[in-house]
Amino acid sequence: MAPRPHPVRLAAWTSLGFGVAFAVFTWLTLRTTVLAPLDADHFTVQPGTWWAEAATAIAFVTQPVVVMPLLTIALGWWALRANLRRFGTAVVVAASVGWLVDQLFKRVLHRPRPPNDFSELSTDRGWAYPSGHVLAFTVAAILVSVAVTIARRKRRTQVLVRVLAVLTVVAIGVNRWLLAAHHTTDLVGAVLLGACLTSLSLWVCGVHVDPRWALAPPAVEGPMPRCAVIVNPAKVLDLATFRRVLTRELAARGWAEPLWFETSVADPGHQMARDAIAAKADLVLAAGGDGTVRIVAGELAGSGVPLALIPSGTANLLAHNLGVPTDLDAALALALDGRPSAIDLLKVTVDGRAGQSEHVAVMAGLGIDGLVMASTDPRLKRTVKSVAYAVAIAQNLLTPPVQATVTLDGHVIHEGPATLMLVGNVGEVQSGLSLFPEADPSDGLLDVVVTAPRNVGEWFAYGVGVLLRRRHKVLMRQGRHLRFDVAEPLPYELDGDTIDQARSFEARIEPGCLLIVRP
Image (cartoon, rainbow, N blue to C red; front, side):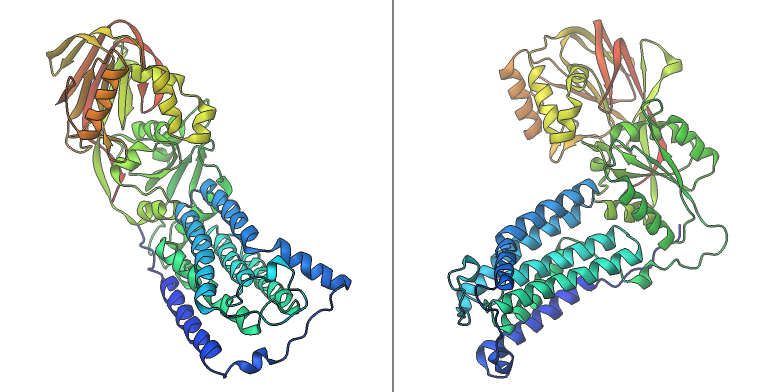
């Protein structure tokens, strides 16, 4: 893999530069008379004229209390859909910190507004330095400009957006100046402070806008490496942005145009993975949830073709357990610059149908686990993510135990009632919540948990035990070959997908059969 040139990260230096400039400018404005000529002459519109009314209306609808929430909602929603979580966090931080710091400086510096004939307006109340309107639009202008850049829009679009953003800030400043709501220095100070706070927020949240030279494709000797992208369009909400960002990141590292495959209900990834192997792809990128990853990983098992994950679903348990970041930019950086290592997979066979065995990367279950996955509302899942599973758990909490026999490596380890029967390759289902505390996807062992809570109180005790990593009334073992046999057919799930019902359920560990890029 061709390494990507390490870009100069300008956000920290930009923030420092604007911060120093704001501090110096503020001192010169409020403690000296050097900048007094800027505020000496002040042309204002005449109250009662049509353009005074227009300026007043503009001032009212562009108040920071309106701009900041709208900015946060619009850009935050876009960032969430595009899986640009770092940028989404930066939007929230920049908008919140911008408003708070603006209010803080006004109350500390106590600079009065210039005399004007619009003192009855709500937008002209309070202290003057810095201008809240201009600061809010400076934050918005920078964030929108960064958004079109990290989304890899066309160069022409980026330039147009930046020009419009600058003109908007200038127009808001002129509007405040014509209404005599601020001194000229109030407006300049707001621009400097807004640029400082936004750059600082982007830097702290890990959003780095690469300079154009860092995106130039490096010289590559020999054939260019190629990756195959297998994407679940139902999970990647902003497919256009994902494809632009991915293609640009590959080109910046000297990779060839990627092979592009989209899964469907008819084929969730089987043939796509086989085609990637046949095309001798150097890397397969799987963008989707745990179901997509399970299918692709199963097809790549034993092929020697490495897999990289771009988490896009609800749980993303394999990515979470391996430490793969959920942010698109960070996940792509790991996928294209990281090194693959071998992990285990589980091979599951139900009711003795060996010809229909399937691989599992995370965990599989028989009984209430399958019922929970089957009863999870997909619409609720799209809306509230993992909370949908909690609703399904509550609906099935009083499912009665069934008679079960659990055999591990040829030895019966449990014979009696069971409600929850799970086998896992990794441990955590959420951050800090581990069903298999000793699970390691590279240890050559599968992990088993069997328990039989009968009522809400016993389920509560089991949940507390999971949180505290205690094993009260819970059977936990490790081995290589597991078999569940139950008295009646029960639903079973593989990596969160309910497949069917079964009376017997076998799982074998396949050590080191999959190469995957992980931190």
